Amino acid sequence: MRLYNSYTNQVETFKSIKENEVSMYVCGPTVYNHAHIGNARPIVVFDTLKNILEACGYHVHFVSNYTDVDDKIIKQAIESNQSEEEITTTYITAYEHVRQQLNASTPITIKVTETMDKIIDYIESMVKEDIAYVNENDVYFNVSSIEEYGQLSNQKIEDLISGARIEKNDKKKNPLDFTLWKATDHGIKWHSSFGEGRPGWHTECVVMILDHFKGTIDIHGGGMDLKFPHHENEIAQCKGTHHHALANYWVHNGMLNIDGEKMSKSLGNVIWAKDYIQELGGNVVRWLLLLAHYRSPLNISAETIQQAQSEVEKIQTVLKQTRLALMDLPLQTGILTPLYEAFLDACKDDMNINLAMSVVFEQVKQLNQLLRSKTSSKDDIVSADTTLRKMMSILGISTPHPQLSTEEVSLVFAWNQAKKDKDFTLADHYRSQLIERGVLS
Ligand SMILES: [Zn+2]
Image 1 (cartoon, helix red, strand yellow):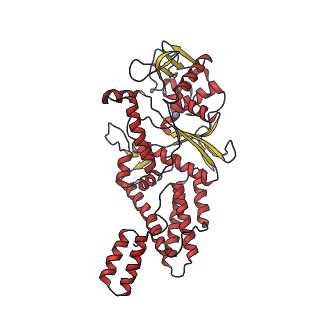
Image 2 (cartoon, protein in one colour):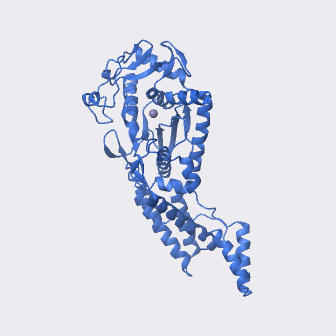
Image 3 (cartoon, rainbow, N blue to C red):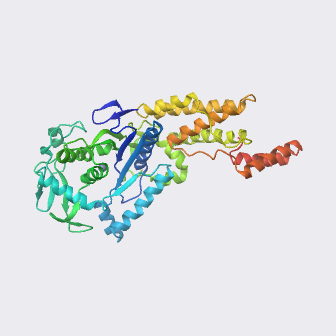
């Protein structure tokens, strides 16, 4: 497996810390609203990466989080007259529904509220080690205590300081210092030795990783927008407290545009993942999100949606028709065709899904040819069918049940009988029903 490592800015040969095992952590959402279609991209990208690693023989230990403590959640709770927990429970359920509908497996997910004691202990340890300081009742991380700050985002400290995105805060010694603990007088808060308040965003992931995996992990993932400052700050805290790397490979997915424009509230082009899934189905949305290389920006437009719809349909159609050809055989699994190796090689090359998809269509073409030819062996059809289904399961596309249902089998028999009886009206009637079910085309 070769993977682009954002930390070294190059494609590297992947080597796991433990043999045949991969530890992977991906930053999860802040649960104050529904997931938009951009939030669905990391779900699909990292689930596909997990499937590929599993196909390579690794056992993947996949952990993610829910940021269920945040100013946006507190604001939403006050505005809607609900508790923070009511808000987060609603949106965690909605997020899990989206993940399920995108055929993504569920990682071990940890909530900030469940980890609060460990987060507070960790912040206290940073103050003790003098890499963090208390100002009034807030706690800040001292960025200048860490050498190589800026390595992940490939930026120099001086450039970062002059960057316009750093907000001025008189309580900070250095404008790059980030909040570890924030004293609050409203909304949900916890008790700590610094006073009542809540933790900053950057500490939760480090605590969860160190607590869960007890050391450096193989892969840390997230959207490109998290690279700076979030991931840079995760690295700095881990270096400051544990003096080792947080992760060996940093993997970031690209952003998403709608008709060439960034999705934003002000442009009014925010699309909820749930609405797309409802309109297009989970398979089409997942395929759509895989159309661009995971590191490139993905543009969603009427054309790309149309492309995803027709490509998924093409695959589903041939798989449905295969069931008719194999109707008399018991359910069986064939030997994978040589195309499987080519497919997996593409996936293993920094997730070159575009190339993998072209191999999928080569397999579709071969299967179609086998179905059309009167001399095809059933074994060859079974092999091609098994291979195509296996490719789909790695890409996370659900496929029709490999066998016709009893009802469909009866329809096929009735159709054949009507043809034999030369009752063409009745034969047409059955034929159209079989077309409707995708058994015939
Ligand atoms: Zn994170």
